[in-house]
Length: 506
Image 1 (spheres, rainbow, N blue to C red):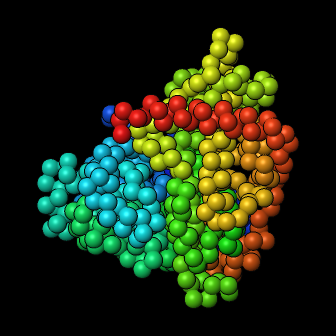
Image 2 (tube, rainbow, N blue to C red; image 1 turned 120 degrees about the vertical axis):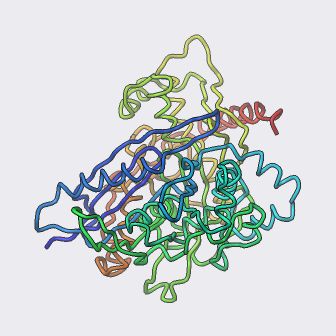
Image 3 (cartoon, rainbow, N blue to C red; image 1 turned 30 degrees about the horizontal axis):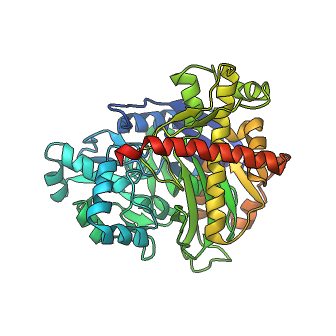
């Protein structure tokens, strides 16, 4: 029998299933978009049942592409991270829609925490590595318990369970037998002590979240349970789980201290491995847990950490061009449109549709298009949108270099938008660093597959995995420094305009 590892990649806008072979090549792939719900301005929700049904559908579609002599060795899961789901323990029915990581409905809750509990605010930073924000799960769980009739009482009686999307998928894959998450996803809830690797009772008590709601926490490469998929297969080990960004770092073979990657997905996420040291940021970055496993260079299986910078809107800005203002028909055409004009005619877009993430952390900032003249065309707006992704990444890298005390000469990239040559070249130009794109840009799913494969011996060790990584394209900076400085100065002015818009709201 030929064996493959299945990666379930549950993202913000779609569910995907990819089957990988030992060389990290894609054997089969299926994807299905699902509905985004926006009940109020700044609110974002998903239907948990649709998340599961879309994920199951793509699993079936990918499995249908296999022949009779092909099978699955193990399943790895990677997922949108901070999104919060609460469901009934007895029936598995959600009590409310999933509140998505982008959702800003609890921004005032975090503001009150900062104003009235400054000591707790700092405690949360120290214990979780996160800057308290509506982005993370804790305040989302509290909102559900407060606004769904009877939910808080039921939670206290042990009748409700919480999980990030990985937990929700594992629960359904095992037909309710396993309630678990991994260290990386737990580290994004704002409830998990990343130093002791335990749920923090003090933080949970502040948000009035009963501890019995929270899942068990295990390493990212670990046999959590077994999937019972009926006709699709029974007793398949679920052996890997990691939040999407940590999975991408692992898939990019970011195993050593100082290794960095940038993922261009719905959001944009720059991570750097800091080894077994949890580096505290003074520049608005987050300290988080990296996906790791037992290896010759980490025999004790010690947890590893990463510095992370998050951009809320990256690929989502391209989706906005397509679906929101309909300037494009599809994402690939943006490359030709951007290359058809020399520059943006002085236009800058700050895509703060859901506030600004690192290093600004302002939930009230809103999208801003500045510098427009009557000579601006559709192509200039499209180019300004793509350039905004690169500028935001540049802000993150500058903060990361400052915190880590080193200069990064290259960055590995992945995610859907990394296939855009214009964006990658502009990224290299504005960073003044080389950008390396691997042959397989599906590194988020690949990282989940590697974690699952290592747990069951499909891959022997990290060295075998590193031999799979292959360079597809290298983008070297060719912009002159004076031009780079002028463009970055214009971007900084545009960001100040977006922040000024938010001043009356703070």
